[in-house]
Length: 481
Image (tube, rainbow, N blue to C red; front, side):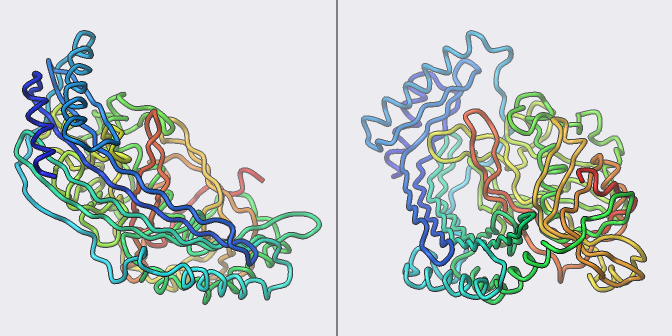
């Protein structure tokens, strides 16, 4: 492979590139789903190819191919330079990259058991056992379970002297029950809506045992049919870990992407309220208990790797410290644009045929000091909201509205009645400013988001969010009744 990558870089330089890098990527994925006791789908996919990215005459050029041969590498590298030179004719300013070191290294996700080595019989039996547990609950109309596996093997090489090999393995699972009566439909999910993924192997199925939790999940779905509507008003909320993770994703992760801040990207998630004047200015993003990081070194996270797709080492970035905003997600180009000495290592692409862009790594709310039991006991009157059901946020990442699958009333420090259809709304700085407690590391999980869309053409990114239950005061609830 090194002969081929060297050939691409040499060809690009011979054609006039001042910088070139190549990624050779093989991706493999598998998705298995069971619905109402029947294997509903089995999808296996594999792609293999390479992409060459260059700077020539101060502009970017990119070309890719699924034919990995010496002749095709020559053609594609030359084509990337031709595109760059054409782009330079209309460019406003030359591309400048923050410096990085030349690296020779290998990285692989640590796993206990390869999910691709597990037989279909074992996987189907696992989902069927969960299905049978839920089917024993009267009132359940639909039972769905799924298992997923994903692997990316890639080689990165650059004209700066880097040659990096990486193998990243991830696994996912999810279970959902739907209860139906004459008036309505209610859904309950485990361990998270839309499933849960981690950079692990088959051992994930042991940690989040679907068969052991299926009956409880089904019983909660049925109970929601008879539960009263969630009340409206201004209340104290405790969000569970998965909902806190999505709150982080939407109201922190996307607005700290520097390409959005600079107006270089606005697809799907819009731009950002965290403009450059707020950096290093003491801007208050949240309360003193809010501490957030972007950490690509975190074990188990979907945003964990050895090196990003520009060859920059994985690192931890302080985003919010004691409520004060302090850092963006950057790549080499945007870091140079605002005078940073180096990239934050956040540049990734969906496969070999896409340009890299800034993507979230693992954007986390750091643990606090509370146990969940103590946090509930310390809350006189409020709601405990579990598991996301819906979300909406404006194109500056300021105004948002979320819905959850269920809520429990908190009265005099104890959990009470179940409520259905809870929703809440807020504005990002005020909402995080209302956070007065975060649960401790015993409750902290790196929740996986394998379906984050960005860019045109859209790229699906894999991100993680470390979160524990957290409390927020004086929040508007029930706005979409």
